[in-house]
Length: 279
Image: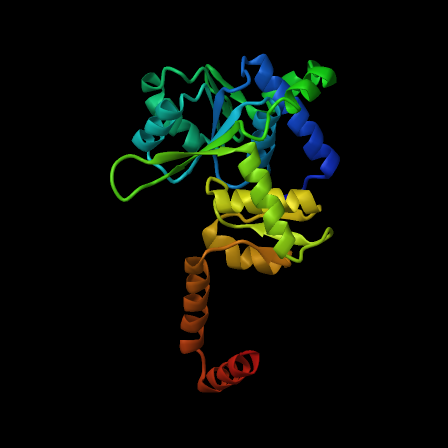
């Protein structure tokens, strides 16, 4: 996998990812995370999102994705409704949201931040949890917990905003996820060695399902910086595939057509000719 840090694309190898999952899972266990516990992820798409998700599931716990675009009171509702005992957040901006509602979320005992200049009191950095797990890693115990979940057991609570009332938490089991991923791979002609770009929020099950399929097939995942940078990221990475929804393609088309409309008449003629050939 790869993500853009400080203006350049940084790679994470398979062994590095595997070790990070193992150590982070152990670090969470040291913090008191038990099988069945709910752990929230409040983050944009980034390697730590996937590492956290796999680590939570490897502890036989339950992942609760939270959209990073939500406001504090919305996040508070999801944390309380799910009974989350820990929150993993991406940046200081997301951490501030948690701090603003923490007095109203009594179940949350641990807050972990991926990227911050310094961790405030009662908050750990992602790397601190990884290092704690590295120092106390017990492979036998890790494998016992990893093998514990059965297909019918809960893997994740995905909150989907409704047209009325509070968001509803959809309960998805390990069997649901594996079934969907296998069925998807039966119809998608994707093979190892390709690159897939992660564009839609991982808080949505479509992108997360896409990531699981990429992992199963040995496909490199490139995490887009954000929606506004997708065009640039696509040109930089040149992925062979990505998951998207109609609105994203509509926005891409609008941007292209707007650029064409401000071009010279010659360029517009060439564009219309090329579009006709493509169609």
